[in-house]
Image (cartoon, rainbow, N blue to C red):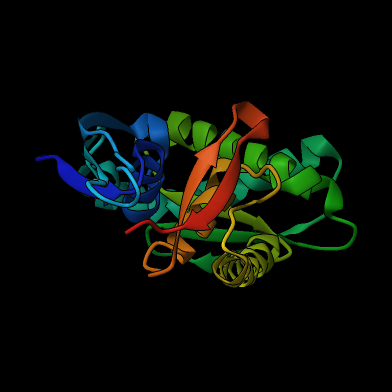
Length: 218
């Protein structure tokens, strides 16, 4: 499969944009940095970063028809087993039985499955994907939600990003958001990707990584 070129303000943003567009996690594609981002001087001479990404497992070959027919049943069984091992009572509902699969766990008092800033939910989804790969011998794109948390969080982050962008524009100074996991940072980056007045970048390391919203130069 030929590489796909992605352009963004920084290499980090380009990688996060690639994850969102391809529906892949960082370890599922190779990255070639074609050009580093350059801010320029006084808004002059700046250049956006350009990367080329190549999926390690091409999406069109990752889910053969045989896998698709069994996928929903397998993923549902895995999640139900994990809930039992965790001692949590919940019902696994299939939101989409087409690739990528989307499942939601419903029930009472499921906050323990979400965790602080959704970290437990992220781990649950990751573990589910690993077990699915072991069972089906193929990579399967899927998302796991708990009581619609991800959808509510996405809407909240999009509204917050748009509000902060207006604040940056009116105050003429950058605003740094609270630390967020990679998938939530992607939401902010993508929400403001086409904003003519501001741009975004990620700073920090590990769990302390956060998004900065700043005026677009030039």
